[in-house]
Length: 372
Image (tube, rainbow, N blue to C red; front, top):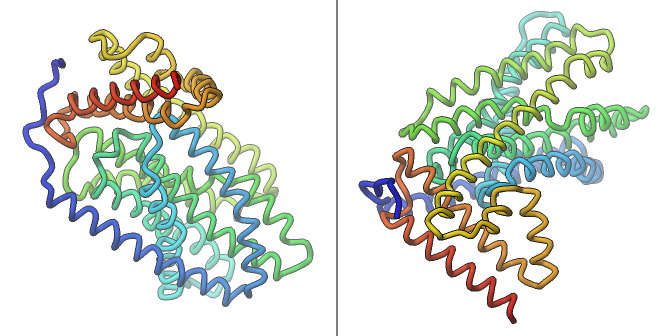
């Protein structure tokens, strides 16, 4: 059926139980941290301001979420994992930053401006990138079989960054509201509309590095790839924050520095999407040659635009859920083959046979729904 040898061993059932226990503990920790952080923010801002600021913060969060969904359109990551990443960034990473700031409280001189520079350009980049990056590292440890390559790592990093930015925006928007004098408009435009992807841009390096590590089959803690990703993440974050202390015009800096960086981010993630699309297409054609997939199916499975049109057609005939199931199983099979081709462990020793059965069954269910 395939020229790829089966995995030498399948995951132990005990590991599955352990992963489940860790996942529950992880969500409990995230929930506890979220309650604590939001309680702290309400205490600082007041309930009314907190709620209003949180509603405002949903706008940039929605913008970023739309971008992440575009990035993750080939094979969306499990909602449980993406919610964990976002919750970790919004709560645990923020709590870590607050605790470090309270304990260390960087003070290097009597010069207040110098203190602010050190805090913004040194302390914040290090603490915040470590905090957000830990979300991706934890997912790498306990869910690396769902990370097929760098784009998956970037997706998890993006959700962690989106969560952190959401909570941070609540604080900044709330402080601007309390400050009065129309500060909220400038703060909202500057943070919410002009640079909503800033945190994503930084932490993406951590996700990319860990995604490449997963693709290479790196085992263990993967602290090396984690640190490798942290270095550019911290450096870019430090540059982004620190440069603001030296520019005379924020808007000049924005268009000359931040806009090119953002365009570079778009080009980079578009390249990553094309890479993943090429991997998917390669393995879909393999199964097409073997007769398991039709040419017409490959045509919409290997192209996001065609897939969107095909789903609209399926929805118009009442088989959208059946169509989604077929796409999900087929895409998973292709990426499982990609993993096997690199010698990485699969879910079971019979991964290909089981995957092909699921694809065939999903196709029959879709056809039955269309006939009915």
